[in-house]
Image 1: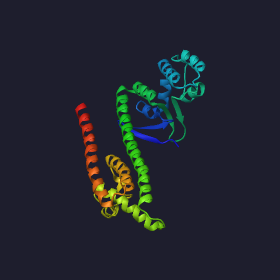
Image 2 (image 1 turned 135 degrees about the vertical axis):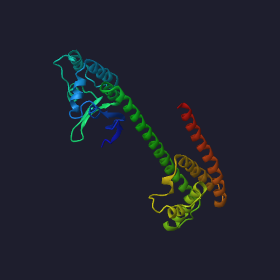
Image 3 (image 1 turned 60 degrees about the horizontal axis):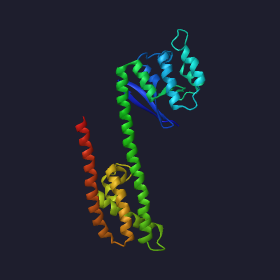
Image 4 (image 1 turned 45 degrees about the vertical axis):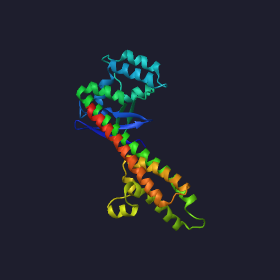
Amino acid sequence: MTKVQEINVKDTTIRTMKVDDADYICITDIARQKNPIEPKDVVKNWMRLKNTIEYLGMWEMLNNPDFKGFEFDPLLRQAGSNAFTLSPSRWIELTHAIGIITKTGVKGGTYAQRDIAFKFASWVSVEFELYLIKEFQRLKEEEQKSLGWSVKRELSKINYHIHTDAVKANLIPDEVDSYHSSLIYAEEADVLNVALFGITAKEWREANSEKKGNIRDYATINQLICLSNMENINAVFINDGMPQQDRLHKLNEIAIQQMSVLEGVGNRKMLKQENAI
């Protein structure tokens, strides 16, 4: 199911969605700037223009190998004349276009690939186009931040398995039941928690009883990067037979050093962004 997101541009809700990794923006929503009652008429009027058909055809030729150029040529010749009319659905049907798609139903509308949507917004209002681009870029930046956190969390999970394998191979004797095995796993996880966060998982839960999840679910991206590195390092320490107390002190030193570097990098990036502004 395609996920539809919303951005607010000058008190107008604009829907966006991804189709095959391409961003599409609802031009029906944009058209409400010009005609809030019949926005579809605004879209049709735009598609009557010769410049519009020329632009849409060029976009399809560059991005759509299945575009029917032989159906496009007659449309281009007729475009702009008083008798010429063209709806989005008819354009798609005739040319197999992919730059514009239509959705039916109560929350339906016409969506256009973002370059086309920006072109349409410029025709509706140059001011609105600029605000739309700004809000859309903000949405993309938020998505990238969310994606970055998700990737780091998954990396941490992978390294967690490397860590638990080392615990199983070196710290859990044969014939230990699953209950006592889980205690050893939890104890080793808390070695990392104390080294990085300064508290055990149980201590965090007691101090944050109103929150769902665990201490690592609330970690920053930098903490997750550091934790991922520490799980690998601790697996090496365990395989080398280093005592737990020694590992804890060593891991704490590594955590302090790595977090200092990671936070420093973040601050330097923020400083560059402020200077750029």
